Image (cartoon, rainbow, N blue to C red):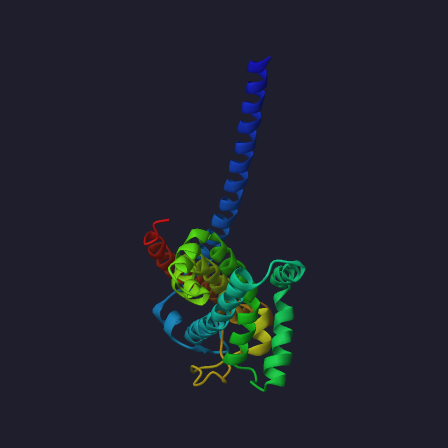
Length: 289
């Protein structure tokens, strides 16, 4: 009887693990298929001119250099906005705020904010930064909007990283006479930095790939040169793809350029994420806890 029960549980476990492996392989195969499809259709458009020249002939020829630089400007700007605000909010929520109903409501609001559609952030940025603060359609307005978009992600990841730091670190620092702020600044934050970078990686990927927020606040249809100030408009890869695929006058003619631009955008996101992952991994190796 006991042997039969053990065999039944072992069979159930084997079936469950098999199902999980099948689902994981399905997800990986789907992702790999999409990447392979984009690579096959886009690699033919990749050339030195495509990466370093401006668009020409109504964007049916030339390159995407202004869009590449514009995406970098907006992504870096969004991280510069979201990272300090997100870490400061996470430090307050994790280290200073008193646990209670108000704190739970704030955390619930942050979680819900992460699920708000990006087009809503775009309209909010249009009303607040472009209209109220008179920044115009510009890199500054787009970066601020994207920064708000990824802020809930950065707050959540940073707060989780701060909670993972053992409480004995805080107790030892306070026991040696350090103040609470000194403990946070010199002990807790350095220990939580790899986890905070995880949130930044997620934010980088989302900021670089979003179209709706920047189409209202930062992106322009076409420009030859690079912006000269944060108050200039800018081309961006996601918006460039959207224009070529849906709003252009030569949609079929530009199809190879569309796939090539998608391939460049994916490569850029993976490249930025890879740099952040390398930095995070090196930081983790220095931690012995």
